[in-house]
Image 1 (spheres, one colour):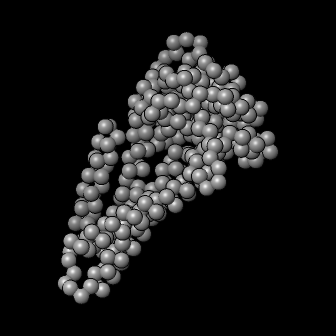
Image 2 (image 1 turned 180 degrees about the horizontal axis):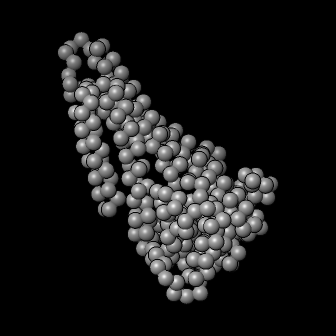
Image 3 (image 1 turned 90 degrees about the vertical axis):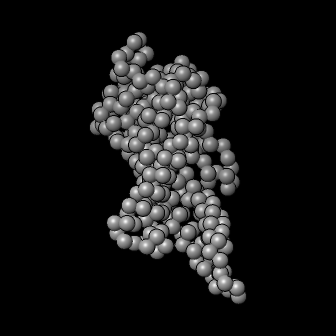
Length: 293
């Protein structure tokens, strides 16, 4: 329900801003310039708002508890390890949270490198060795240091903009062409239905193609984060962590924020839509020194 509310509020905000921009600039609502503006607003609007609220949403999605003051030896070790890794890569120590889940998992999010969140599951703390956990933390710290969340948002915004703009531009041409070929007086309602139908179909097709691009980058950044972890704590620790994940729990509860532990297993064309590479490929990349500095 919260996601639906945020989606509706985002769209209302975008429409409001769109109307204000058109009234200020004097651009006609049916022009190409107006189409580009609405494509930019819808393309980037949702991505930017999602990124800005990512920490808040992530914590509530997993019921994470931010560590304000360490209460035990595990929390003290966690804060100390993350602090040292953050200093090595030159970023501020992120907010650190623990959430209760059997899954071996960790994730990082946030709109800025120096104001981010790193959350780990209790399953990871219980089922991984200290060295393996250290490697996972370094993997997430590398994501933050590389600015992967912002880069992903920008890429998503760009592809969304092109999907919306190209789809509606073609839909407008098609609806005008079909209307001009009719002998009877063209109907505004018919034009609208054609435009809406064509744009929806094209957005679906182009959206699938755009998703291939974003998922490719998502897989690429996982290789880079693995390499960053290997550079920070040692290749053998990162490989051991990935080996541990091969026998770990898979996320069971719908709505969990999953980043580190996804094990892509699809083959052939479906592999294009994986957000994470298969664990064996990640291990092979580390063994072959691929992506390592």
